[in-house]
Length: 366
Ligand SMILES: C[S@@+](CC[C@H](N)C(=O)[O-])C[C@H]1O[C@@H](n2cnc3c(N)ncnc32)[C@H](O)[C@@H]1O
Ligand code: SF4
Image 1 (cartoon, protein in one colour):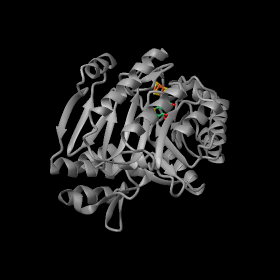
Image 2: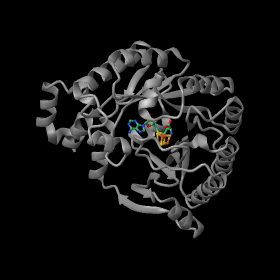
Image 3: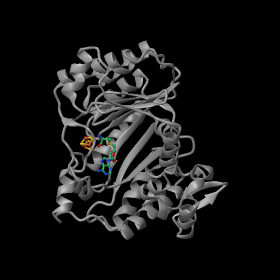
Image 4: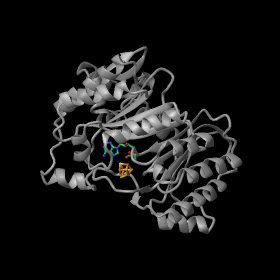
């Protein structure tokens, strides 16, 4: 049963120097329109599946680069194919410089009830260091406009571990993040992917990333500050007020079936994981020919499913059943002794120290 639909919008007005997501600088409205029509044609190729949709998510790239009318057309057209009336969560990622109150009204009328705003930081120097095109005021205005339009379910994305960011800067940022009427915060540690301009600068020694000790201090400050303000961590990078955990993310982490549409989108249906081409021209060509734009299919065997449950589940605050890793008990005992993990109600759970090395731990566990 397909429980979620993800739609990838691969357009941005400016490519951020740290970004590794599939997106190109493209503001041409006619290209946006063609793409959205193709998304709907792609959906037609999957109408034989069983749907019980709990979440629709427009991510990117920058979905808010699309005109609100086009976003609304997309949601309403999906609704004509698959009933979205009872879907509890329809989210869209929004960059702070794009949408006004009127735009959010249009989104709200189409059924969108959650926005995820790429705030990143409220300190102008951090935004400059990240090469962002928005100001702190843009973020305040965007939150205010969404709320006034009746969209009450709001996430703010934060990035930490920025060059030159002190612990005091971080606390200042957290104070602003938590003073706002939002119910979800995602805090990501800045990653310098090697194929990005940021990655190249780091390699050349022109951009200094904080060391592991500093990052651990930052994570602890974030985790404790947010918990104190009533945001409970439910995953490595995600904190929410009670009942506002992102349904869409939970679908992924709990191994539910979902359909991904658009360039580079992944799906998991009927035991098969598959991923679309990352090339926009190829994507459009394949859709024009009535073909699924899929680049690879992977059959998920029970053993692979077990590995995925470990890899994804260890990210969750509730951790994984110990039974899943019973063949790795030496390593499990070692990370418990060293303070990277603990046992809670028979489940293996990462500590704050463990969160920072979660990729290493999960790769050892699988
Ligand atoms: C898929 S991006 C799209 C959001 C939106 N386009 C924006 O940038 O505001 C979702 C989030 O991932 C985070 N992110 C992207 N690249 C990152 C990186 N290299 N390191 C840490 N976080 C990153 C940012 O917080 C961003 O808001
Ligand atoms: S971080 Fe967001 S706005 Fe920047 S290039 Fe990536 S997707 Fe686009």
